[in-house]
Length: 179
Image (tube, rainbow, N blue to C red; front, side):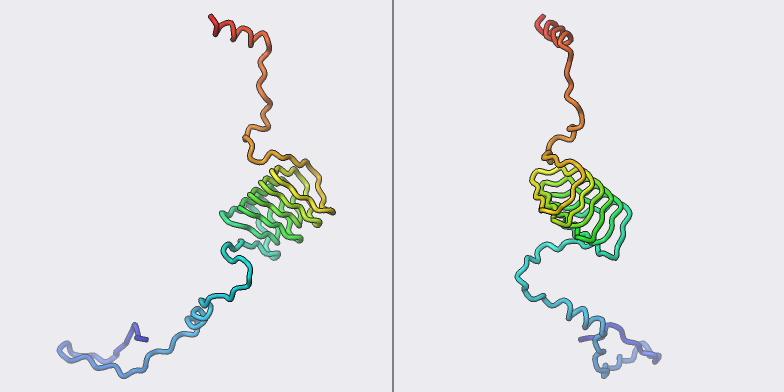
């Protein structure tokens, strides 16, 4: 290993030949050794390690919106909406807001709404609000105070009532178009 910086306190004249180095190489700093050791590959545990979830630990309380383009594991408290690909709400976790994802697994508490393609409410789940889903699994013991609607992925104008014209107006429109 070569030394990047050398210091020579002696003043030298510009025409003199530079002295040869006789110093031993500097030892590698301890921090670098730790980094090199931690860069070693992890042993295979049999589980898929391709995608790691972002974890909100039980010691965290977040006020505001949480978004991720990957999976989220919630074990703390969130006052705000949560968006991710796959969201797992742990048994001690609490969310006050809406949870949006492809898959939502609830073992804790949500006071708000769930919108997901696949929803799993475990036996310890406590859901206060509507669940908009395409596929839902509810284990025995789960609590739900809200509506379960299989409407995930349908048009956003689902709250708008269909527009119906009175019969007289429809006839006038038909007569004008035939003239």
